Each structure stands twice: as C-alpha cells, then as structure tokens.
Image (tube, rainbow, N blue to C red):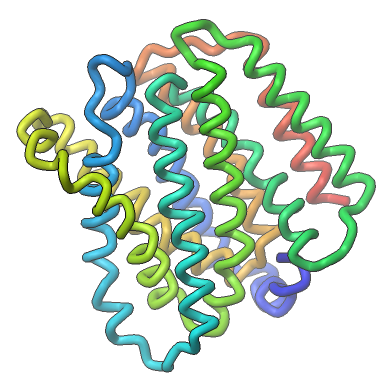
Length: 300
C-alpha cells in the first residue's frame, strides 16, 4: 500500500478528522472480541457461528445498500473485482476465521494476536509496491513472530488452543489484505460506496452459509444475546467499517495501521473485566514484543 496511497497519505497528514475516526473505529473493534466471545465462545454453550455472522453482516449490508445503489460515478469492471476481493478477504475471511477461532481463544488473547495486523499490513504493502521489504521490516517481522509464539505457549488451556490461535492469525492476515486493497478504491470512488460494496460482497457468503440454521439459532438467543449482536452490528460492523475506510483513505495505510494498537488494549481489558479472563505474564511479554516490533517498523 505504500506506493499506491501516497496521495492519500500526504493529503491526510495532520488530519484531525481522520485521526478521530480511526480512534473510534479501533475502540469499537476492541470490544468485538469480547462480544463475539460472549456469543460463540465456550464451544458447548455458544451459539453457532455462521447464523450469528449471517445476522450481523447481513444487517450491516442492508444498512449500507442505499449508498451502493446511489453511487454517483459508474464503476469499471476492475473496480467491482477489487471491491469483491477486498470484501471476501476483509469481511468474509476475517470474520469467519476469527469467529471460529474465538470458540477456543479468549477475547484478551484474540486482541493480542490481532496486534500482528499492522506488521502484516506493512509487509503486504511492500509486496504490493513490488519492492523488497527493508531489512528493518524483515527483522521486526521475525521479532513479531517470536512474540506471537511466546503468547501461544504461555496461555492457559482455558484461554486458547493451537488451532484457534492459527485461525485468529489467519484472520489477521485476511484483514491486512483488505487494508492493502481497499484504500486506493476508496480514494477514487468514495468511502460510502466502497464500504457498501465490500460489505455486500463479504456478507453474501456468510448469509448463504448461515441461513439454513437461522430458524433454530434465533429462538435460542437470549435478550442479552440480541443486545450484544445489535451492538456489534451497529458498532463494529457498520460504524467502524465506515470510519476506518474514511480515516485510512485520508491518512494513508501505514499511518492508519498504527491505530490498530488500540485493539489489544481494549480487548484485554474487556476480557478481564467482563469475561473474567486471566492474562499470563508470557502473554503480556509476547504482546509487548509484537507491539514494539510494529512501532519500530513504522518509525524506520
């Protein structure tokens, strides 16, 4: 993304609106692992993943649909293909992988693992720009991987499984790909239409997969489940997506990726306060290594 977003990044330098929108987006996203853990966690007791995702993202896609239908500029075939690929990666890929992972991974650890996203954005951006990553980026990538490994071996059995951790990391990579693909399209076609298009393409597979079990999942949901689902739909799936797309287009991908640091802090605090999750010293140490590696990569 480095090369393709230069104009947006320079135009957005010192942009207070972009900074504020990114902060709010990441604050909402930090609560998402807590909410999803409440809904689908504890494998035997949680709700089925696919109907929950179908309700959440199908509703979000409907909310955004008017902005897609009222787009002012005709889109080319390349625009539609980019929007479809971004939606399948960042909406479908991220959420399906993360939600299944969270059935066996606590909210706090999910947030810590998500701290790898900024580093993945930098790496994928270097690939998209068709240039070799700088040595410092390679070094920080290795350090970040070591941090993730330390978190993985330090967790208690109730806080995460190896398979769940791999799914969370794969979801982080899917989101990083979205962050590399979407901003260039946003700059050319506008935040609202692009958000609507990526949401529609991303939500469609989840709605199709979750629809068969919807009739049994809905009656099983408590009032608390419905409130949590509504909050996730409006906050994380709708408002945050729009705020992130606007903010990242104004500031540029590399600067925007740094705001993702907020997510693990909010998730860890929420998991401890609301779910009673414990965080081990090894998890904290691994999370610090990941955060420092990303900070160093961005500053060099």
